[in-house]
Image 1 (cartoon, rainbow, N blue to C red):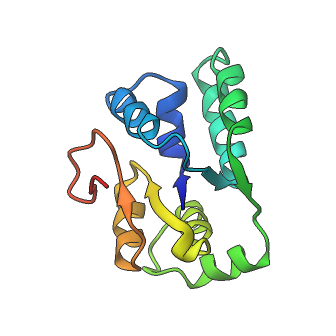
Image 2: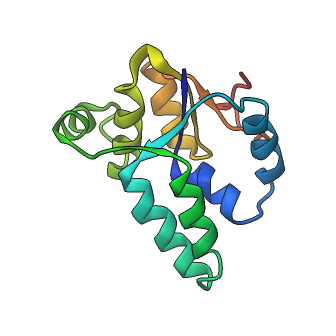
Length: 140
């Protein structure tokens, strides 16, 4: 089994936010479960860290080094094009497609993005958002 973390989740491990402690505890309870994300996250997370003031860039780099990265290759791009709903934002479709391609190996997609959570749930991807009060969040 693997856990896919999108940028909204990883950002909470770089910068203290309301759900940061709950997410860290949830992950700590699964020490042997591999963590994965898309190569897209490298760009998103590091750009977000730079926007804050740059002081969190080293933490973001260290965190990314702990994750397995799914490349934005043709299968991911093709799946993202077909990802429903059609209104799903491009970057969210890329994350959801990356997670979906993990198939039965995927234990959960961790996101705090409501639209992505709804889209992922609609196609059968288990979604968790530890600490969130969102209806799309289901503790696993």
